[in-house]
Amino acid sequence: MRIFVYSMREYDELAFFEKFCSQYGVEFGYTTQTPCLENTELAKGYDVIDIITTVMDKPIIDKFHEIGVRCISSRTIGYDHIDVEYAHSLGMGVTNVTYNPASVADYTIMLMLMGCRKVQHIMQRAAVQDYTLKGKIGREISDCTVGIIGTGRIGSTVVKHLTGFGCKMLAYDIYENEEVKKSAEYVSLERLLRESDIITLHAPATQDNYHMIDSKAIGSMKDGVIIINCARGALIDTDALIDGIESRKIGFAGLDVVEHESGLYYFNRMGEPLNNPRLAILRSYSNVIVTPHTAFYTDEAVSNMAENSIIGAMQFMKGIKSEFEV
Image (tube, rainbow, N blue to C red):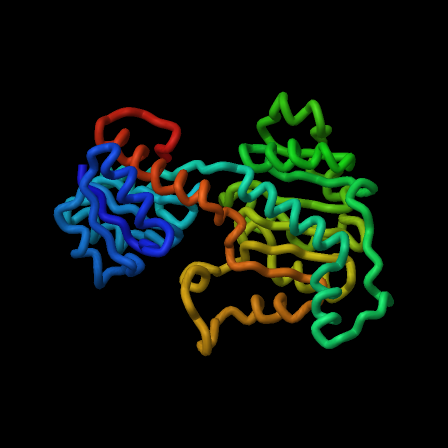
């Protein structure tokens, strides 16, 4: 099998691709460029393209299909950036990856703690040498009810790691997890939104849950609620979120993902207009922390992503059904 890797980060990913392609007997080529209509020819002669979060719509899928690419392997858990149905209609495979869920779970809990203790505000005030205590009093997470929306590998790991903090936990998922039930109570989404002091999102982005956190959902939450999103930006209606922050309904938001981040995150945009005014608004608040989709970013996770993107592609090419096939 021959695999062509787009958006290769030479400073961290390349060594893992060299290691695992050698281990599995796979030939690979790469570019640091993002896949686009102008550089699809780079993948000519390869069976598989390996990508990250770049949008794969019909025109670019057609171009790759025309040059003989048979599989799109995304080294991400989410695959909402790929028109999977159209790729399948052309007979092309689509695969994703899994990686150590502790990376995102621990980052999520870090944001919860930063929200509880008003760390963003404290650091901003300290930067101008305001060392007073006024307005900086926090709350203890052990006194909070935490609502976890989505209890797959990452959400269930959040539950597991939160058990040591002693907080009450509510969970919502259409598929209940028996292990999660040992530490959290499964409830309706409406009850979770109504009773939680902290709400954290760990659901995939689908048509069914697009903007699941909208103005109505926010209106049903507790005053001063903490919202954490380390999943997908499309789960939250950004305009409703901003309104909730402005009205003080939302006490803190920790966002590792935002709407319309494709083409923005993972690029150096210093000195450029971002064409995302809502992101600028969110970054202006002292009770909001926005990080550029880095919750996953640990050495173990990057290794997992490289290896599993190769394994998933290999299994598809061999006609083996696998957990990575979408």
